[in-house]
Length: 351
Image (tube, rainbow, N blue to C red; front, side, top):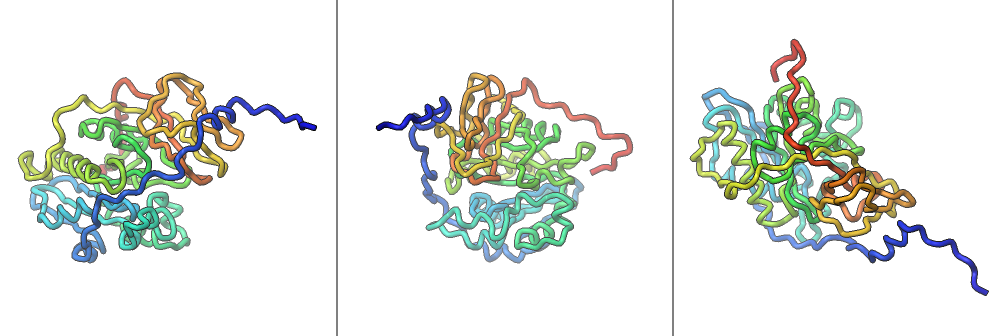
């Protein structure tokens, strides 16, 4: 005797029909982590090298290896430090972020060294930094904080596990999106509000205060462990140093690729955080994919259907396998023009 079964929901039927998604991306390491021992001591803090010119100017910091498995930025900073790069005005700080996690990087298991105790890029609010909790990453954040409190422009270098086009993440200040747009590379700038799991370095009050003047950008330069990713990091960082006048336009730094159309700016309309261990996309979406129609089903989170909230919905960095509490994807809408910075509140201190 055959038992009657409830029919599958259309969403679940679509998911099953789509077939299995990859359990993980291909983990090919095409970069070699250089010997960083000469730079571990720093001249300002461990892993931090800071150089001031006689001529006044802004304090620009380039931060690498906020996550210890993202070694591309460390490859770039090693090259810059060995070259003897110095600013002609202002101050330049080159920062190796999570030193201890970076030291544990193993090309045979390249995802294992993202952090030691917790994510260094989810700790940047006053309550956490000033609280009593302890971890390797909190010690590092608390050590870096006084330096970051003097930085005017911060470029935080990252790379990505799942396939995606390079992009800037700017947080909420319009001034950050404007700066990213003016750099002209990469071709996508995304204004967002971060993660449920905690604020990033670019969300730290020094850089995110609406009435402030300091700015931070997070560059997602491409796939982990690819030479092209390091080239993108170096081109963007070099353009920032030229734009701020820390190096001359003719300085021997890598030049960006030939002229391209101005970057497009998008604003996140929804951040999708996985709530169940069964979160799954219906397709192996690539970051930068645009879903044409509103209300298109793109994923299931247990019984919850995840649908696009508007037409021409940009998928920002979809993670095809996530744990509960992690960001699965950001959904964004393209803007017609860069956001306009509101004037600082009356009496606001200079940054």
